[in-house]
Image 1 (cartoon, rainbow, N blue to C red):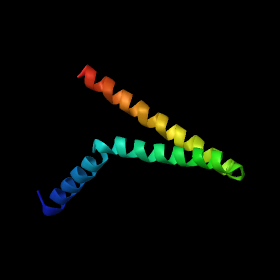
Image 2 (cartoon, helix red, strand yellow):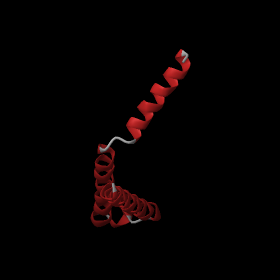
Image 3 (cartoon, rainbow, N blue to C red):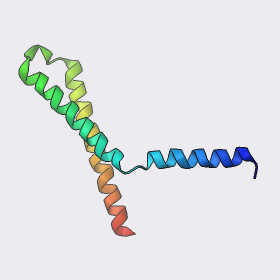
Length: 82
């Protein structure tokens, strides 16, 4: 094997390890919850913040949270099958 092939394999392993890092789910979940709470707080505190943009931001945060939970449930089922 030449050095270029070895370096490509190592870089693929690094990228795969970063993508499959388990704490990502928890970190993303915390970030989405903070975003959701912040936008909900803006809605309660100042009615002028109730704009279409903030409603869309709230909807996107909710959708991302649902997707994270769905991925966690899928992984849980996959582990039970193995």
